[in-house]
Amino acid sequence: MTDFLQIHKLDNVVVCLDKLSKGDKITLTDGKEITALEEIPAGHKIAITDIGTGENVVKYGYAIGHATSDIKAGAWVHTHDTKTNLEGILEYKYEPDSSYIQEKKSLMGSRKGIFKGFLRENGKVGIRNEVWIIPTVGCVNNIATAMAKQASSFVKGSVDEVVAFTHNYGCSQTGDDQEHTRTILADLINHPNAGGVLVLGLGCENSNIDVLKPYIGDVDSSRVKFLVCQESDDEMADGLELLRDIIETASKDERTDCDLSKLVIGLKCGGSDGFSGITANPLVGRISDRIVEYGGTSILTEVPEMFGAETILMNRCKDVETFNDTVNMINGFKEYFTKQGEPIYENPSPGNKAGGITTLEDKSLGCTQKSGDYPVMNVLEYGERTDVTGLNLLCAPGNDLCAATALASSGAQIVLFTTGRGTPFACPVPTLKIASNNTIADKKGNWIDYRAGQILEGRTFDELTDELFEKIVRTASGEKLKSEISGFHDMAIWKRGVTL
Image (tube, rainbow, N blue to C red; front, side, top):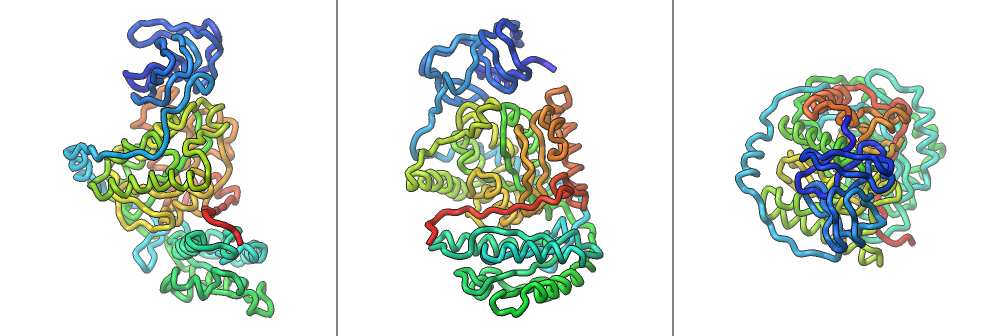
């Protein structure tokens, strides 16, 4: 393994792959020798030229901020001497490479392949056959959890498990905030990874079952059942009987050959570090490209972590309408911050900074690499289910649980989650953890499913893309991930309004 990585020929910083001590030397590809002027942690940046006060710090071939003081070649480049260039709401111009977009669109669906999934009556495909309990309101969370625990003894046939997805919402909300809760709950009730669902209500909540039913639409009554606890003499007994019936139906489902074009993958990163943008995220970008070539769908979210790299996505939009939708998503999210009296660019997190990410541009340029190289085909509102194949952008925050739940509600059957710091959580669908470095993969082997840090050891992106894609197909066909083996299931709804 080399001591450093220069990502782009225009960069005036390189990433240290190992910790450098003061006095350590690195030799650039042009033969120039740089001496470290101080200790620089692994994953952090070292200047390879003098950078004057106010001059841009360049990484990935783009400015990631400007120097707040003179930076000498060999110095550590980080938050103490670099500041973001980002400010305010911007105007954008659509500047696509039309021939590139057309060439890429011609390759969409060019590959053919299958996986073993559960074909649902509506034509959607599930990669799990779970039975879900969806509370309409947080007041019945404990009942839902108790039901799931007791109903686990009923599991048989192809049913994987019974899962209760608890949350704190469904009442004391207003306006769009309440609407978003109803939309997310309805999305999950209709998710193809659920072979059956018990919708569990209290009875007096704003988003009670009768209110929620129009959002859910028509359902198979043998698979989706409803229980209002206030109307039941014994909600536990009644709920368990309904769950027994649902399991009886779902247990007969069988995996069958399904076209890979039916696969929808969510793209998410969290606990990122200085290696995320050079190993795990570009690897996932290649996976996104691969599934699009099979005619499938990928969904990229975390809008605040597009700031500073948004023009790259905008100029890949398939047409001006999609470009305008992207602009509205970006600027709309900035307005969301300002209306709350919060700074737009309060990012990255303390963990990101400790891992080597300095500014939001630094983070975003690494984060958006998960989108790969194919055109942006569609922009989704929060809670909107995708019906467009190819790369979709989804409006949701950067918060891991909120964003990953939003990906699931938009139709993703699996989420690819890259991380440099590690995290145990799992969203409502299988959550495949991809480590950006081997240190965290070794330390948290009970969390991590795949090692993108192998890139730093000399393996190629082509090798790892083939390997990881095969793992994704196996996962879609039933192979369990680490979080599933541990029994982890989480969901979180994006809170956007007042609480009554």
